[in-house]
Amino acid sequence: MENLSFEESLEKLEEIVTKLENGDVPLDDAIDEFNNAMQLVKICENKLSKAEESIAKIVKDNGDVVEFNSTE
Image (cartoon, rainbow, N blue to C red):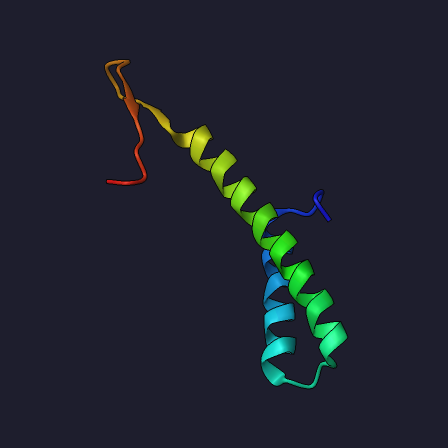
């Protein structure tokens, strides 16, 4: 599951959410789907974090490095 792209992970997460929202899933299956969803969330968070790190340093025209701070 960890080798999925961000887009694939997000799509699978959306499918799980839709399935769970419909309420037609037996409890045991719902628990399994919830666990899968949590793994997908972690994968998405990790990929977003890595993407943020990649763009965290933006080089201005004059060569200065600007630190990106997502909390601002």
